[in-house]
Image (cartoon, rainbow, N blue to C red):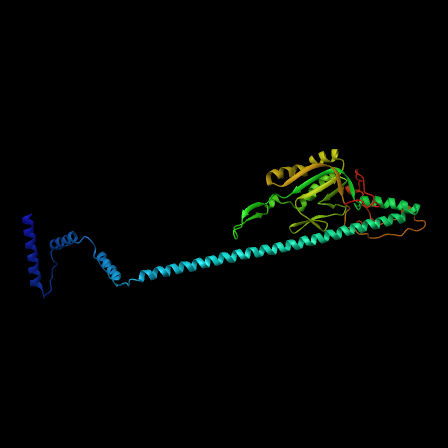
Length: 357
């Protein structure tokens, strides 16, 4: 080891002499690699860290020494104020959203109230019209009963009115409760309050569904049919208007109560065995719709509405009972091929007694 250090020291002195002797003039050869390798190894062994780390540490110390004592406090206050402003903006946005949702709900409730009040007024006018119609029938029968010819015409007219479903009827039969699937409950994303969500399309009934059930009841020997208290006549239509279902011009809503007068021992098994009944019984288990059929011992169905007298001919002295009369249907005559022309087995309310609901 002593010899190596001595040899290294001699090499360094020799290198120094060479550099001093060549100072000021151009050197045509490179220094020896052994000297450079020794210097590089010495620097690696003595300087463990790169100079960049030391410079960065020095700059950091200078900045820390030059900062004012309250600078860190000011930075904290600025950060706190920024967070406060962001929270205020978020709270304002949430409040605005919550206010807009109740406004739309109030508008919807106002429309619902308007519809309900209009429905109440329409029902009152309908009851008034039925009362006046009963009074008119009573006066008409009194006039026709004054003569033999008039009495014959009165009987013919009553038969035509029964066929056109223009008189109230009572008797036993069946009742079908048909309804949409129950709504689902979920939280409102705007207000966080629970709300009811309408069922999906597969769980909602359409006008064709009511038509299928009504046609199945007619085919099962029903003598008179009503949907939610609206009597069906030979000219009655069941159709859709947007999302609503109309029986003629009267809207009906779920659940739909379809009442049919007829002999229950015949009507009930025939309807239960129909394709429509089997289809909706299976859909009740799959889609959750409501479909219930029960026997009823006493049903009262009102007279059909919406039919107007189209034409009439006054009776002459020799007209007799063969004079044509307007029946109030679309063609002026009853549709004898329709189930509505069958006389209810429970009996028909006499127009002169003012029966019906």
